[in-house]
Length: 275
Image 1 (cartoon, rainbow, N blue to C red):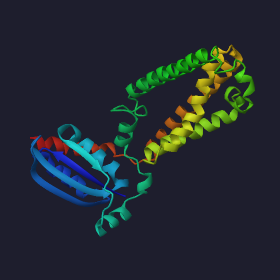
Image 2: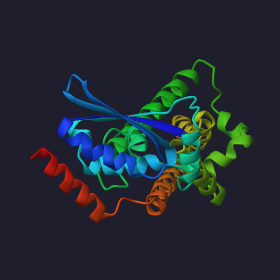
Image 3: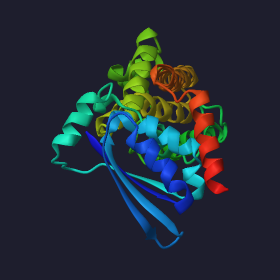
Image 4: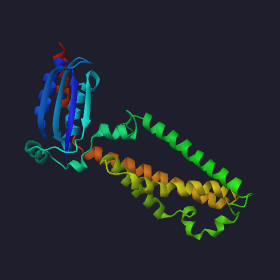
């Protein structure tokens, strides 16, 4: 898996950036177009490299403050025909399918906030969305049931007939196990850029029935079943969130990071280039 980086930087910084790119493992091509950027004025550098090498290079570019002084564009071409790229991909450590680009993950999960990196705005926004979204959906289900019962569209003893849905209001160990598996699968699909269609169904099955059952049971006066469904919903959400955060923490621990001293050396080079 080959990735293309398009880097726009001020002219005085392009030399350090080119040096960082050409010396990086997994890079197959580096092209420099001096003065190609009109707004902002500067140079354009294009890099082809293995996907598993992208995160390391992006960290170097962050250390050089490229994202503030210019821009970094990450593109995944559909087809790259190049023996050099094939060799670079073979030399790069790891597998492209498992490679994590953390800025990409952050953009997919929430703009410019990273809960695992202890930036709490994403966690707060996600909690608000969860805390508002589910009650609104449950209120809609309750309103629908409340209107349907007097119209004869929904029998008042409907919950006593549904033996196939007893698992919704009888939480057990498998409830948490399924939720944990859903959270792991969902976060892995985000990290590895796999299709999330089936994952969304998987997660919905573990949460939506319990949420809807709480609302309907309350309307029909089945308070014990409503409490059981609420507990089921809590366990499912807890399992999904804990598992997803656990996957992110694990990947952060096993992913090689740019050593602090290397980042400091790059910052010094960037400072010298400004003088």
